[in-house]
Image (tube, rainbow over all chains, first blue to last red; front, side, top):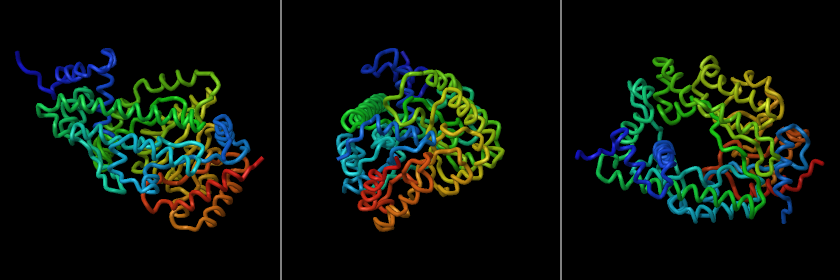
Length: 42
Length: 385
């Protein structure tokens, strides 16, 4: 099976969101969006 | 000992905003990092340890006793970006500076507009994070998420302390973005240098990107506006900013920013709500746009414009500022107190004025301890009714 590249979208994005196990499942993508926004705009 | 309650302070802010004579002029702390210098704390230490930042903000309040604080300690959550090796801050012992941010590369507006989330993930993030294209990225994004959680815990703890332990109101009641879409287009997506060129070469793309940032915004704002419960926790209802107008001509301002503000202020008028409007740089060349906004809507934090000039041009706008860092940083305590008294008598006796600083206190020379102490002591005891 081909390895997912971090910077691919939506595959890498979804895998990154899924890895945030400490966040409730339904909030993971929106939380990841908030993380990315702060990494880019802090 | 200051025995005023949160309710007292909210009433003073509300009276000032509505042009009613307040019991005394409320004091709003417009501080970012000056308090760290005042307390001899290395910026590198405070910005990497939320406990240090928390203690410094508590001490700042216990020393100066403002009535409300803007984002106490929370303006620079540097560890989130650092987790992705993507920080654009330059931090020294007593300074923090941010570099110009560019997320959309030259010639790639269309790609961004076609799918912003895809573009940001595939292009913007790797362009900034040195780890995004390595196998360390998966771990790094988790660490960045943990740092965001730590930041959220800090802001919640700080707000609870201000609210419960110190009996202070929060600045704004509703947590919603109330800035025009052009604001992030300049400050985050293209940077001031690139967007200045875009305005001449790619205006339609700038407009499209700006409107994209505003999608769904007014529905959210109006839903908050419909809240009719009594305000028991905040000085004002909303908090907004005017941070990207300085490079625009009047026609561009009307099209890219005023179109947003007009709808926003109309909503606030309809539902009888207030907003702070923190203005960067000068704004008086756009004053006529604001002239027919009724009193009681806007509380304007100003930077480069003189408070007296603002009052003359916009008698309908409550001014939050007045005290310049030239006084706080260079004058004597008595000169500062004399100026504070003049500001109150000239601008605040009938409401419409909140004492604050004209710039965010950030650098060593922005303020002297003895001056801030003298001003706050004077304002706290100078009753108007």
